[in-house]
Image 1 (cartoon, chains in turn orange, yellow):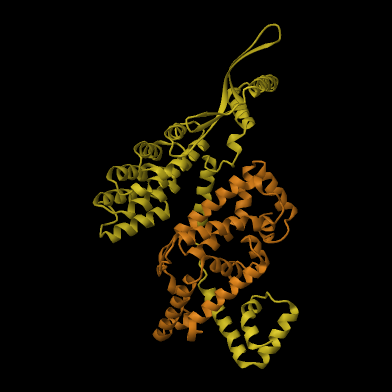
Image 2: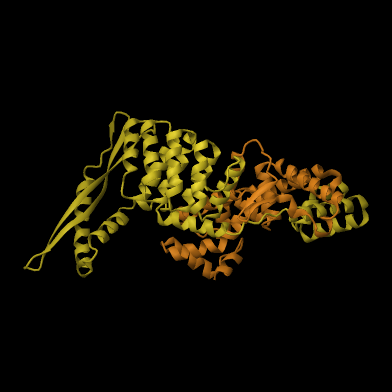
Length: 203
Length: 311
């Protein structure tokens, strides 16, 4: 059932998802937990990708699902649950992005459950590791990409993340962000333009 | 399509957001135009690089998040908006507490008590006049609640029930009003954890005031509900450099059984480093089993050139 719910992303609710939500609305905690488990991986991945910090991703997770718990009774089935949930997710994430204020440099080393990991190491290709020049080039390219992402406005960044990493359609992104499909298109256009020009000769 | 119009829809084409007719025109142009074909290649290369930066949540983080969420909900932090204000919910809760072990009588007596509530509710409606008490708006409501204290069946087949009745009044006023503040401080000692969480949430921005500060410190050290303790920690953030606050936070770090609380406290403590923190973190490393808290303490100890344990 959980899988069915997750597959309902952006689409009409399956009968199973529908009854799970109604049960959770009636105060059934097991149903609520199942609902959380159907969506929480994608929410956490979204927050990690956007904020690149396990601490902040954890805060986002907690804030989002407590809001879902508190406000589930207001969900009226007039849009997909995924759209409703992602309205909360994007609002919470946009708040976090805006709170950062002056765009801070993201640290090259991220803390993970297995200890600190150099983000850049993830980008080295197996055959390139032995080649110092290639390694340096890769590193510079990734740094440039990170910088170009930092240059996007929070909204451009959000549209880009939802389209590129979450694979949502622009129509759906417009609904989530409370705007039109055309406005979402413009955001995506500006975001990719900025990135392509920031990367210059690199790609 | 011209080169300019292709440039405008290139990302939309790449993400499959063009109509079939537009896609067709786009492809025809790119097929004949080397410059636009090169732009499309750049978009593909950029996308491939972006795919490689996709972040994965550290293993264990998802499970920790789930555990913390359920702990916060069970602790009352997630009480649905409006639920705490429902008179029926409060009444039924009071009823279920009063009748634990009395299930045989629960339904008929419950029905009788409901009748009593109906009677008092009807009586209260005649008094519904809002009043103003020096800047505060006080509104009597028609909600009254009862807690049944004793029940005595009598030989004639009836029953005598003693219950306490509480009438609700609604007070509204600005947060900086001293009486509102006093009510909120009183709410931090209420039995209902949802009320404590809400009051903490409102007070947490005023931690510079002495009585709020004391309430926050008391809650972080003694409140049985992790949701309330987490709210209190949020409120203590601006005071995290003060020695007496740090002392209490250090005790909480070593004694609190909730990992979400320890995670928040360790974050606060390592932000402002002092010598006293070294011993606390070293003690913590002896027994801490939460990977995030361990990692944070380990990192802070290393940065302070301290050993990870006491020898």
